Structures are given as structure tokens and as C-alpha cells.
Image 1: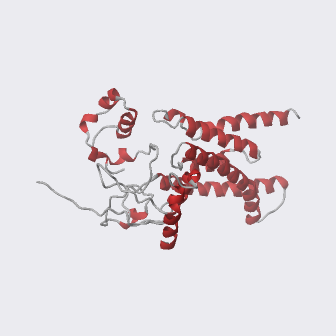
Image 2: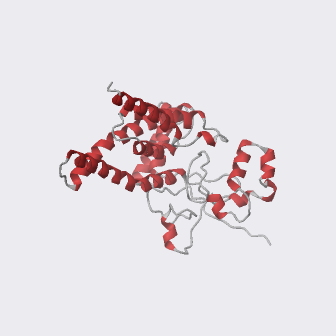
Image 3: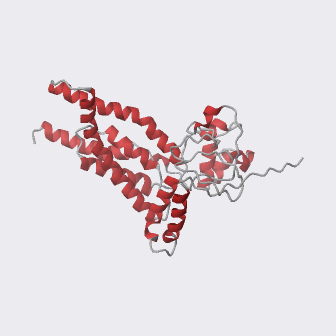
Length: 103
Length: 200
């Protein structure tokens, strides 16, 4: 079965002071966003990245949400540094790009 | 809000490549993302992302540090009044501590963020938020009588070594927030202390 999801682009949205506002309408697995107070809520997801390009922060977020029993952050780092042996050791063949879509 | 956004859009071309204020591109970019969440969209692969970003993470760490910072300020005043054997009100004690700590925070942020801005501009990168946390940790870990120049050196050292030279991936063991500020602070404070003990 093929399923097609259409989401808004979101590039017309301008959120002010994103670093401090409660942001109840932004979905995040982190509790830095106050949307976790809202319980089970439906979110209008869009395609915004909501940030710039930064260096990777080892925050343990992937470990918390990853269903597979691998070391996702170490794997991402091995991919960034281009260390193929380490990528294989950490299980690159078991994952797809969509597995990393949360962060 | 809309007027502000329109104004930013109007002055933005000046900071782009070829604009007359191109030298301040990183500063403008930092200021723009401080005001508005970037609305760039993902161009390939996965389209839905978690909303978390590093500005938010760093600011929340700073918020988490504030209670300790405020208590530290009060405690400095309390210790001072206790040592002097004088009774003081809560606000007098807190005020004393505030005036003792505030210059350290200002020096730390001015030196660290200054270097951060210059490096970002020089390397054509966006300004990294990591220093927001380092900049509040350094004044919190130094002794209260630590001279400001030691803090300035510590911050410069921390930013240049941690964020400047070892920014590449795979060098995380060089990226500890504490180590680099600690080195000059400890060396110089120790030197100071010895001088005091020796009556120099």
C-alpha cells in the first residue's frame, strides 16, 4: 500500500523569540518545549528545520527515542567523520534515513 | 512583529554577499535568529523534524543555572556581612553579591562572545550558541576575589581552544566546557594565592 502525506511548507511562518517563548504548538520529544504540558495533542507539522547549521551536540536524544538496540549518536559521528569500519561496526546497514527523522 | 520582520527583510540585502555591510553578516544573522526562528525548510530526505534547536537547549541550561547563581550571589553577601560582624538585610546581602558577580558575568560574555563573533565572521559560519553556557559557568566556578583579567584570559582561552581549534568532529575529548577555562584560572589563582601567602 502506498501512502502519500502532504504537509505545509511552513516558510511563511515567523515565530518570534523562539529561544524563550513557551511554544505550545511545536512538537518536540524534549521538555524544553512546553508542549509536553498539553498532553496528547494534534500538531500541524511543517517542513521547517527551525534552526541553523550547527555542530552536533551529544544530548542523548537519539538514545531516548530510538527503537533499535544500537548507538545512534556514535553512528552519526562515524558517518560525519567518514569512518566506514566504525559505521559498519555500529550497524549502518540496519538503519534507514527515516529512522533519524526526529532530530 | 510584522513591521520588525519587514524591516529585517529590507536591510538584509546589505549583509549578503556584495552588500556594503557584508563584514557584519554573522552578527546580523545572529541577531535575526535571536528575534525569529529560522524558517528554512528541509530540502531533501526527511521533511518532519523535531522542534529542538541549540539556542533553546543552551538557554534552558542557563535558566537551570540561575537559581544556583542567585543563591551564590546571596551567599557572597552573607559571608561578607558575617565576616565583618555586621547585620544586613536580605537585599543588602544580595546586592553586595550581585555587585561582586555582575562584572565577572559581563567580562565573561563580552570577551567570549566577542571572540565568538569574530571567529564566526572570519570562518563564514553562523554564531554558535555554546558560549552562552560557558559564559555563565566561568563566573560561577571562579573564586569571588578572582581578578577580572584572569576571567578574561580564561574565557579567551576557552573559546579559542575549545571552539576555535578543535571544532572539527571526532575531537570531542577536546571540547569539555570546564577544562579550558579551568587551566588559566587555576594557574593564575594559585599564583595569586602563593603571592599572598608569601606576603609578596
